[in-house]
Every structure is written in structure tokens, then in C-alpha cells.
Length: 243
Image (cartoon, rainbow, N blue to C red; front, side, top):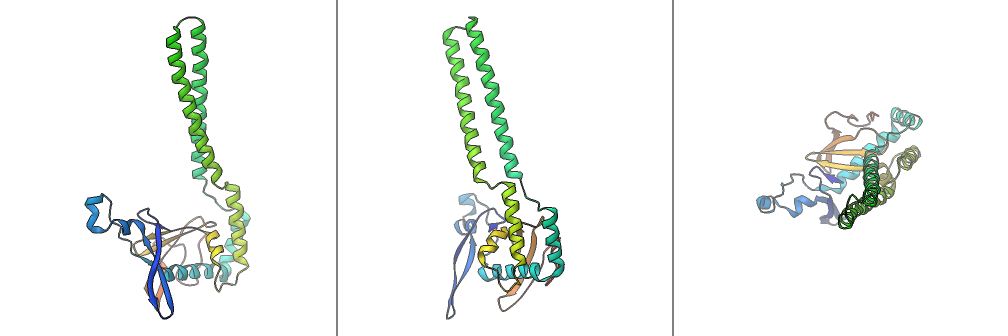
């Protein structure tokens, strides 16, 4: 879960009752930087209120029930499996570009080192100048190599597009196995990439849908309804997920 202010959420106790404890999620920015301390800390006050846990569960129920019980949705999801799932490769692409950039820096400065040696052998620079210039170029090369290594380590920690694609396909296949009356949390974690919480509405990004599902939930726990929010990808109740 990500807040519209880019902060994360903390889970905390919401209420105590005879039926047990209930929980909610609170924006970390809102909690740590109250409105009255805006000028003192220099942070913009976040207007996003706490999210009761039941809202997330009921929205998940709404989304996955529509996915698994509506025949049109199942047909569309099967088409996605056949045609390929769009996987966001932006982060991987950007890291690879940076690695290539550092490779060029290393190559260019290595060439400069070779030229410097030739200049020195031709006695066009004195030993002191040579040592100073050689040290400067060598330090640059070592720094670029370290930066490149850090990027390569970061790249290894990111799942490859191929792995993401296979996981997404597996998640869709597993969805087909459910006649939805409640999907286990583990499957939801596999399928839902992120939930962005806005003021009054929620943005669900699923790994196999190209566009997020935008919903809002109105009313209290005993009397509420879920509906689309702006440029909908899903209509109210038992509607088609537009994929």
C-alpha cells in the first residue's frame, strides 16, 4: 500500500469489541507530521485518512469475485494469457542504460590512460605530471566500476521481465481455479502489485491488467457500496473488468 503522498502505511489497532480487535492502516507521513507541525518540519500535511482493514478485504472480494464469476472476464483473461501479459520493464531498462553509460565512461578513460602512457614514453610530460594525471584517471575508472557494480547488484535483486510474466500467468491460471468465495491472502499478494490510496478512492494495480482498477467505497461497514472512480475499468457490481 502506497499513499498518494508517496508514504507507506502502518497497520495499527482500530477498535476493541466483544467480537475481537479490528485494524486499520495509517499513512506514516500523516502520523509523523501532524497538520499543526507543517511549518516546523517542512512537510506537506497528508489529507488521506486511516483505511479500515475491512475496506481492503471487501474491495478485494469485489474485484476477484468479478474476475472469477463473470464469464466475459474469464474470456478476456484467457485472451491475455494467449496474447501475452504486458510487463513493466521501465526500471530494468533504466538500470541497463546506466550500466551502459558507466561502461562507456570506463572505456573512454581507459583509452585516455593508454594515450597518457604514450605521451609519457615520448617524453612530452614529466614524471610528476604523468603520475598526477594517471592517478586522476585511475581513480575515475575505479569509481565508475564501483557504481557499475552497485547497479548490477540492484539489477540482480529485480525479477526479470520473463519471470514476472510467468508469475503473472500462473496467478491468472490460479484465479481460474477459484469459484470465488474468498481467495487466500498469499494469492492476493501474488496478483496485486500495489494499492495506491487517494483521498476518497483506491487504485488497485494487478500484475496481469494493463490499467489499474479505480474504486471508491461509500458508507459504513454495515451499509456501503463499491463503485467505479473516474475513467473506470470496472463498472459497479458484477461488471466487466476492461482489459
